[in-house]
Length: 419
Image (cartoon, helix red, strand yellow):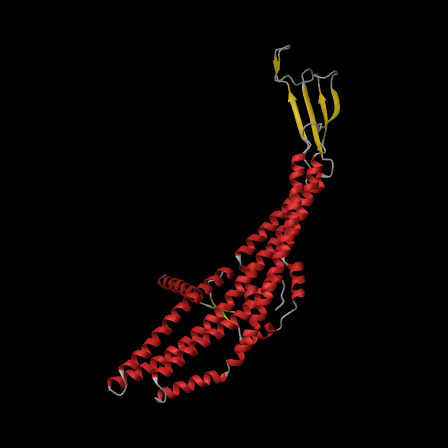
């Protein structure tokens, strides 16, 4: 019994430790892998899928025909014979059945409206997917930028720590002025503060990715410099605009809303056509004859209400939607133009930076560092170069990230995988 208890405790501890380790797993992400996880686990997408299914159910409901109505009237008090519930062969009972017959194509229009709403729900899903993907890809690119900058900061801080220790020892021996040590410590403090600021941005992007992917793992961007090469080709503006007008879900939505408005206008006109109610009944003693069976129909007279108000409102809604289509077309053209021009600037800046930032750049830094160790250059020269080098590294990373984000914006405004 004691052995069983020990085994249970051990199993519990093992499960607990496994959960703790699992909570801090590393999730290495390329754009393709992130998209795969995103499509399976994003809660907003899963929620929108339920909305599509709900709209599909409304199509089934729109196809349903009105149920017949059955009525029955039974005698409660027979004062002539002084009886209650006299419904036998000498009593009275009455039965009837009614069926609404829909005329004018109203049922067909209702089905069309339900289908249009379902199509809009599907397109809204595509629009949600487009926006969330932009957020996800942006966070992955920024995560890679911040990670590279933090790695550079860590290397610089490690270097400064060694230099500070060395200079501090020499200053205590009187071989170097104390002000040089203070200058190095000032640089160390500045780099450390910059690192803290970047860490805040870095953690914010981690949080965004974890929410979008519905995961507790620690995401790590696997973006590489060679991944930027496809971004250097810029498509023609007219090709991008054509793609956008064909693929953009938000533009498709306003066109579907126009179809919906037209279907609603047809329905409102059809509602002015009255429907017919067919009926049949049986009356045991209350009619002109015993055991009387009759048939009939009823139809409202369109004298006062011809649905003119709703028809007029639906007509204005159609005109309103047509204007929204033109407005959306103008917005898309402006967005594509802006993204295209931003892409050209990003490509130019990246090419210039790549020409300037070569291996010689790092070699010069190593050379300056070595010369400073040997005291061949002054502390002021070292500080100036160190700060310039630090800023250039961060700037180059921002340029690379901006190129990737510009390409991502092209994909977003065209709603198609241009890159």
